[in-house]
Length: 246
Image 1 (cartoon, rainbow, N blue to C red):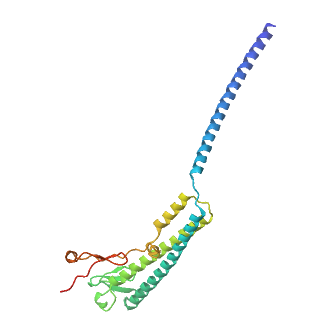
Image 2: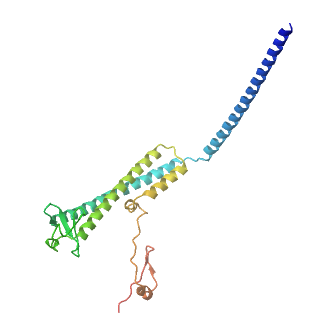
């Protein structure tokens, strides 16, 4: 009987210990759950506050921006046409120079510099006097300076065309984004600013109100000192008064 009593006391103590441990675990889980719920509540409050601060673009603002994109589209088309015209012209001049150039034995067209000290082929590779007698290229042939200048202009126009086409893609992307109708005022303003920032000069020159002003030539200091005060023209542009001749 004594042993049986000891057994129950031991079992009861062990059960009580297990029960207390379970109680502590339960209490800890409850605290963690409450902490998570409070954290989620704070996140919900923050998201709600942010949502309240976001002002969606109005239908009028979207229409005005779409109209602006139409203007950019038109300017882009004009810029591409002008670019193509200039590119056609420079390529025609290059073709004529190649026809008039001295032809080497291996078929390459050669151009001599204006001072007659260097010779280059049509691809920009320099030839030595051992490869070609410089005197064979007469003064009636196109010079290397003239030919290379046209080639450089051609490269610039090709780069400009790529820039214009890239901008056209950005316009299309902006149009698709606005067409969805779900855009905030801040995002719309950022999109507008981005397009203005990346707009090529060739396109900007064809957007009404964005044309680059003509740069007036600088006048000699003597002219500025002797000239009378400038007069303002009827369109508000300051024009210098002609200096009378003696």
